[in-house]
Amino acid sequence: MAEILSVLKQHIRPVVRAASETGLYGERLAADYLVASGYRLVLANFKVPVGRNKKGVAVTGEIDIIAIDDDTLCFVEVKTRTSDEFAAPLATVNLRKQRQITRTARVYRRIFGLREKPYRYDAVSVVLQRNGEPKIDLLKGFWSESKFRKKAWTGDIF
Image (cartoon, rainbow, N blue to C red; front, side):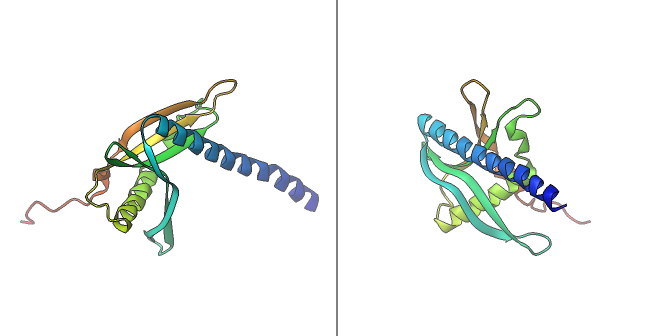
């Protein structure tokens, strides 16, 4: 039994390391692409506590890249895949992930006193193609914060 577990550990660890390295490589490619597109990089891998979930567990938010495009502060999510055969990389930037990044961006803007500065949420898709150049796509304004704002009551009860 110990031999089986030893073999399994050997096979699991390289996959995790490879995925982590793939993500880091994709973030470097995305950062270079953003700079070439006229962005000024501010920060990478910003992490901060953003509150607690429904069970009371502390939640930490992360933003891959924070940059400035013209006069707009951009919070950039980077998704890297070795293939887009089954789904586009940005398909994983679901509502939950968007909400987490939005909460993290609010904390960032509050910490640095940037509440009045224009901002947006961008996404970069990186596909590392076999035998070729990486395919990089930038989507400016991939989502907006408006879908996460609480709706104000506008009607009467009666």
